Length: 233
Image (cartoon, rainbow, N blue to C red):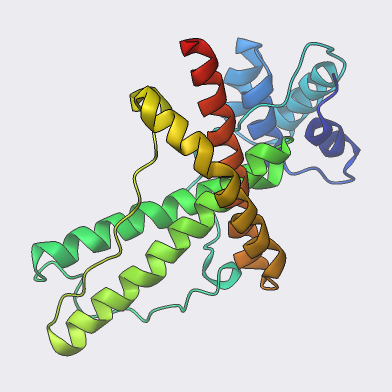
């Protein structure tokens, strides 16, 4: 099947080279083309990329995939897009801070970088499910970034170290006993109903996206539990 994002790229009056390279790296398999488009971004490279994308768009065996992306160093920041207050440069980079604060700073930087990657992925993903996964992860990462700034600023101003919210562990269906599976299968319809209610009540786009993702997470868990129970019968 034709991939919508490839068709859209080819139909764009001035297609972005990085965007096209990303798409070909995900869907293309010609090693020579891959070597060429990774070696530069001049007119020669663009011509090769465009010709390869035309051939790729004619293939009938392609299916939407999750996109893996390693961004160049010059990618734009996300502060303005996620309502993150830009912090002025401080005299110290926290090297003299307690280990807890330095650990929070380092993880904050990692999560912010991951969110930048995922924003690019979400823009070019063809699957609604993949876009939703990326969007939810971006929101979670930016929540952590904002909370990290609060913890670091509080330490700078008062010397106190606030405790970060702990992330919930993902339930592994394979690790559940039959009794636990049956109990969760019994409870999930009520949880799903309540989650849908919270989704319908939300008016803020950010919260509505997270609420929708929660509904989908519960539905996926319900399906996984039913499959596991069927295997045990």
